[in-house]
Image (tube, rainbow, N blue to C red):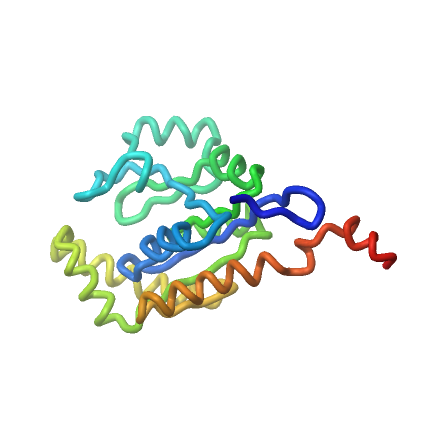
Length: 209
């Protein structure tokens, strides 16, 4: 389902979602696309190895470093960054095509990439997902069972640094109760859809204003 203005199809909005690893941003973004029509999930490219249950083309587009570096050289990424020793990037073509079709796009991305995106797409709406506490964050990371002790400590140090960035975002959601956090994320998208600048001024003129 695509959104439309009062006169024709609207260009989709961009929602930039960041959070420290383990805060639940990917799960929230994925679920939102299931329950809210007119919004799609942007799949990032990465050199990271797939985790158990992840699928190429669904969770990420997995590429080797040589291919990723080629894409950087060809300026195919709207943003890219090194996170926890792996490369991640957002395809400019994929993102713009979705928006051009009138689909809102939600993108879960680290704070480095979000900085680049805010510069490249200042009209984007930025949302930071916070865990209820660092203790809860550590517990969620431990449940993954895929992080070494060294990697766990690195992720926790990075989380503290990333959380300091929250003031640079338009909205902040605390992911304590999942359904409540999902409702708040949905509310942000719905509120943005009915902003004044989403209405076609030519349509308003039919009222004689």
